[in-house]
Length: 515
Ligand code: HXC
Image 1 (cartoon, rainbow, N blue to C red):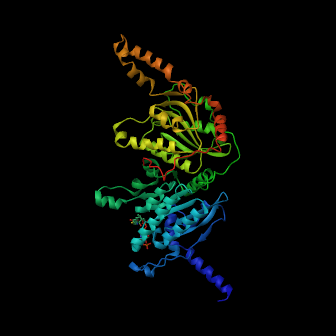
Image 2 (spheres, rainbow, N blue to C red):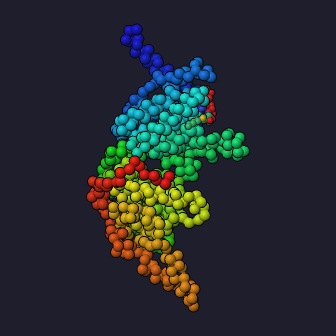
């Protein structure tokens, strides 16, 4: 065949392969607000940066009429490209081809691009939109998932792994996203569950819709499986690009630097955020925005366990992570879910060289039978473990309450914070003044002529003595008591001098965290 003809043959083959599941199947997807696999990739990556591979891969399955079926690209699009000019590996399952179901060839395309990401030390982004294991391919489909899970685990803590759920993600398929670092979901489009409504109805007689069982909101708010929630695919892609701007490309790099910018202090006047009454709540995100560059804060898992706030921002153009108790929700207590959320986030930051700033204002761990039985001991221990294990720069600011176990857990010096600052409003004590006075002055209160008056007096006495930062400061557990207005400059200085922090950890294969 002459070369001109060969080129037109290539173009014809490409045109056929790029049709995916065909016009009708594509229209069905569009009708429910979904883009095609390639459109999604192009929308995420820098313009004209996508290079597709394995376009002509085909399955070799024979059973159940598969020998007569051609599945373009075997239902998944893979390739490389860039975001903010930095390289990434990416794949997108194509629901228009056999429901994006995963057969052996489909899995091989995914594992090949994952292997590239590991070799090239770049992030891997997976767009999930699939009916799960390709039923006709039996154990080969299961083998394919196993190969993906293995790679997800090997890549953990080496390159960032992002999972974008843009359709069904059913059965064992959910475990790949669950093994990755960040899961993105979109309202009405994402569906994740191990067993669907039909099976639940058959086995348990319970009726539930797909949305109620495993829709985007469920995973963003209740299960904590999702880290970012969007109302549309477009919003979701914006979140991916924003996240990518904050995290390093791999575990040997620092995140990219940005121009230094001051916070929008007039919108977030830091000295006015804390209410005069120490029992009144406030939004700790206002404190973060008062401190960080341009007041830009990217919150992770915003809707889940909202009693703790975690996310990324910049100080002097460099990425930092924040872990902050949220007095607006449950007074900012640590409980099962918030411990889980914080513990995992801290470990991610530590694996990827992101300094951690902790803002403390909590009355302790949440008491109650529910919490005890849900394993608050085991889950709460994750926070202690994650902070103690982390060797990135760790800076703590105690804003108000730091009581009991909460004081220790929220990156105290004892868990090896590098610097602990406290605002003059800080109260560092074993417990709140009311509880403490009731216990240690019980006899005096009971025997007093006016017990209520005596209780008030003793609470005031306790407050005067312990509900301040100065006792802790006399022991050196607080390095400096600072004015709120000084917070940004103190943090910037602490980070600058911690740039070359180098901590030796004990020789071991790995620890055994309480997960
Ligand atoms: C083969 C599949 C498929 C699958 C969908 N299709 N899922 N083909 N294997 N798992 C095909 C359909 O036959 C159909 O082909 C096309 O994809 C579109 O599917 P529809 O059902 O028409 O789409 P929709 O109505 O939107 O419903 C989507 C769906 C449904 C909810 C995902 O397809 C579904 O319930 N699929 C099965 C989900 C499931 O049980 N998966 C678990 C598999 S076991 P045609 O040719 O008609 O267009 C598993 C275990 C993995 O995943 C364990 C790993 C550890």
